[in-house]
Length: 80
Image 1 (tube, rainbow, N blue to C red):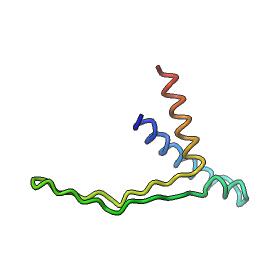
Image 2: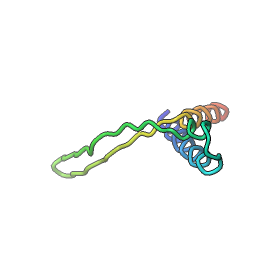
Image 3: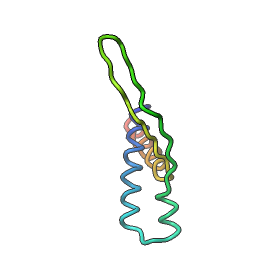
Image 4: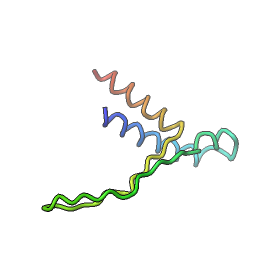
């Protein structure tokens, strides 16, 4: 499930960049490339043997990200 969502976000990001390059300036282009971003501050883990920091982690969501998740889920379902 996580791989499907991650793959869908990657595909959605690629579709967003493709739309940004190919569509002329218009309301449709603005609709497809407008992104809402949510972020987490850096997360530090200290396990006494190993210490590492993740972040900042940013999730960018737009219409084409949702379309990408749906397409990857549909493709994964067709493989079953």
